[in-house]
Image 1 (spheres, one colour):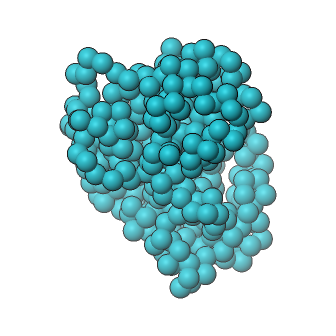
Image 2 (cartoon, rainbow, N blue to C red; image 1 turned 120 degrees about the vertical axis):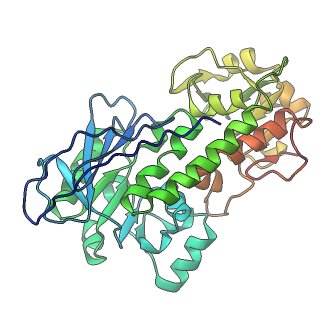
Image 3 (cartoon, rainbow, N blue to C red; image 1 turned 180 degrees about the vertical axis):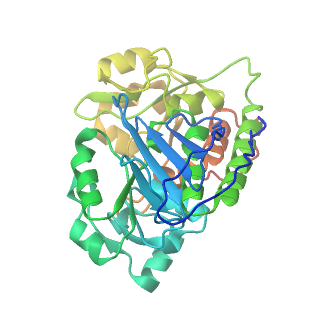
Length: 373
């Protein structure tokens, strides 16, 4: 395991109501994997800086002061987050997973749509207190958020189209916090965003301990495959209107396949985005691949054949080596892989190692994956 770098900063707090905060020269917390946020201890607050939180974002930066002092005076571009908010809106199901890790599900007052949430603990709390739905993306119901007395909204953006909504929330007195964990390409980089949630909810030690434990587990698992001489070939996806969306070689999915001892067919497409290919091109490159994972919503081989008979020509189909990540899913569409997978990369990796190298893994039931029959 890489040693988690913990830098202890000694600083004095001379906070008084209404005065201008004075920054002390300190060293920021050093992330091991995450590249799109930083946490820096200042005099009287923690500075959270979020960088380029969507694809194609350039020089985009959001800054927040996490503090217990509501009278802290800061630059106008720094939004104040009062530590340990009691009423929040979680717009992505991944936010729910982060909150569950630090035992803060009770703070959720609103989500986009409850039917897409997998967490049983979330639904237990919802049954008891009635968590509200406030819509998706740029169509968030700000009036309802105000009625619910929401303090912060955990948002994500896929483009700068999120900006008008962010500004409307600020005008309404609600702090929008842009969470960009999906931009991280390393599985542990996504999980490391637990540090952000720990800082906001005053659960830093708990968040750090959790990250240390899963990063250690992940790194131990990679040791099972880092000396393999032979790697099975792997491809992903399912065509939509005869077009495949395949992750590039520097993406989260490609990294997981590599760490699990697989050879990703599209590894040489070195982008950190999804590429679009015609079915003929995918068959030419992946027709003889050993394993096929993440075939859309398919739950059986018949589902794949019903999509397009040509898909039965792939070697992985003929050999019955197709696995999907929908073992933990709900009829309405909730997917635990998409939800808690962000905080459990070690469990995803363990499943993939068991798929690609069953002789290297213990014979346990899959957590997120299932073999299609």
